[in-house]
Amino acid sequence: MNVNLRRWLPFFVVLTPIVILLIWYVYRTWTNTIFLADFLFVPLVGDFLNGNWSPIFLFSRFGEHLLVGTGILDLFAAKYFAWDNRIFPLMFIPAYALTAAIIYSECLKIFDKLRSIILGIIFLPLCFLCFSLVAQTWVGMSTQFEWGLTIGFLIAWFLQRDFDTSSDSPQPRWPLIAILILVPINFLVFTGSYFPGVVFGLGVMYLSRALLTGKWRAPRIFLVAVEVVICALLYCYYVFILQADKNGAAMRGIFHYFADPVGTIMFYVYGIGGSVMDQHTFESVEPSIYLIIGSILGIISLVALWLFIKTEMYRKTYLPIYCMSYTLGIITAVRVGRGLFGDPIWILNDWYSFHLSFFVIGVVWILLYVLVDAYTQTQRGAIDEV
Image (cartoon, rainbow, N blue to C red; front, side):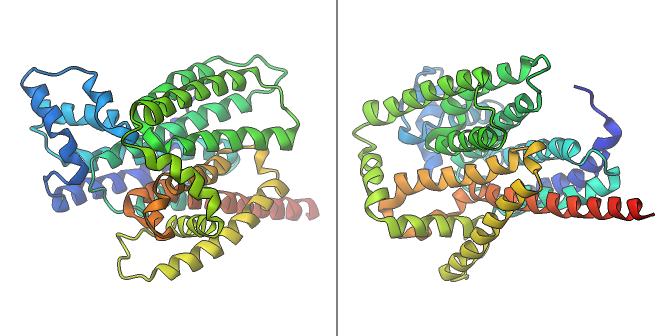
């Protein structure tokens, strides 16, 4: 895979000031204090520092979230940084940067004919959406789930690389190998109960390709699907069997999902509205505003999907479809797991925001492509007339 460093210059021009600003923001505003769920790891850290612990502790204490990623990060911070909790918001920055890099890499392919400066202008709103819509995390476990989102997106990018290879040419093995390595890591270390987002996103991505191109036979995708199913079954065994006494609400949530269809629909509308602005940043905003925004954005997303097909953007990439589907999968997981707690505005809690923001990234990505495609066709028409 050849890398043109000059074509990556706009990415670094856009990204560098954002990263510097966020590091300054964490340094100036973050309090080095343990909050809420972070207290779960106090005994683990104490045992670790005293040399009286076992790695099995990482898998045995924390119920449905399976917070192995956060546990490892806690131990690392305790060993080398005196357990300075500012490492958690700082860990968001490389996760967001990797997400932005994946998007820019795909834009290089989609807009390969555009000049670098124009490409940078197109990428600017997408990069803004990667970083701007989420308040800084205040619970350590959020770091794990953000990295679960990012690694899931990386898996989707590798899957897209596999899609890019025509059936007439030999397929490289590295995208498949990368996926098979990352899937169990994502499931067992970073994702926890939010794995339906990744599963649903990958599934819709494959199904869209099959429906739009007629390419249903995909032995490699079958291997990925088998591994995903095995990981999902292992996770469900952990939650519903080994942790059954702690997680009975999950089974009741599945029933509630179908027994209250109006509440379920409202959950999705609020979730889509929450992809634009999070509750923590706009604490004084009435919940009904999210309902209005979610309804409008839902209609816009349907138009975007129609344009995705009409402009044949699917011949370039399926990642915007993954982004939108990922958020819908997350909303489904939260509805099942937390829908019994109260009304649909539960999905607006700020620790879900970075999951939800992927929806609007997918929509904006499609609309940007449509605008560029229309401009390109207009330019071609003008040249043909001359």
